[in-house]
View 1 (cartoon, rainbow, N blue to C red):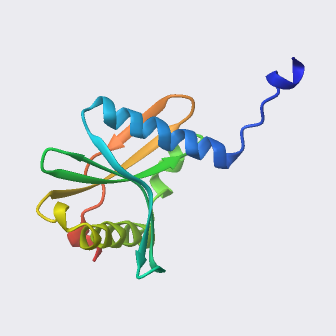
View 2 (tube, rainbow, N blue to C red; view 1 turned 60 degrees about the vertical axis):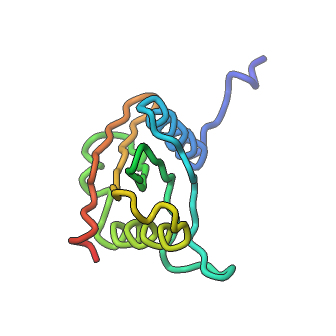
Length: 133
């Protein structure tokens, strides 16, 4: 019984939990999750666009979401450097190139800041892709 109480939560597992909570949050708001941990690929090879944490849709809106788990609020300011913003935007654009049925949807790039266990802050349109590219 003692071993069950000594659960070790690694940073990797807490990151997975944070992403799961954000996906559930979006589902409660009426979004449908169409991809999670999406890695951009071209003809079987990886591209430099990296990974999108998850992609959600609602009506004619597609939202590319990045989840950042931190220990406190002060770390949020440094969480998304310009290089990473470019990677997220390029990943989203690559997703649309590979999934043409969503090309007419309005795009948003949202960022979620999570402090476990249950503090979630969503910043809608946190990344303006016109300014990044």
